[in-house]
Length: 138
Ligand code: MN
Image (cartoon, rainbow, N blue to C red; front, side, top):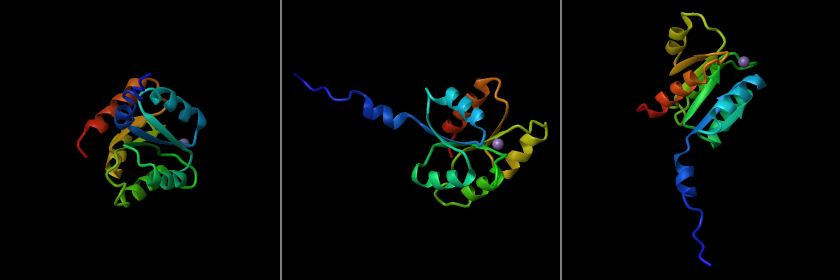
């Protein structure tokens, strides 16, 4: 009997990108997980403080960050990530229900890399935004 080993397993583990989802609404977290689960390794965080702690030990390739979070809002989480030498270059896409036309520029000016509005009706908008940031040079 020949042991051929876990063919391709190691390679696959190295190429699957990791995405952290910071979102307090469980329905929104579930929706994002359903959209991303077959493509990426998804880690969910319910609060900004749990995310800031978890990112230290489980560094993702990209963060999806809800702007409206209890206690510490998404903008503050963003600022803390940008102030952290190890985390500051992470691509961060804002998730927000505030879909006003001026908000996109506001969020980009605040330091987010992109912005996807909720509710997520077209999953391709989210997937395209993620792909663009994962392939962009940091
Ligand atoms: Mn929220």
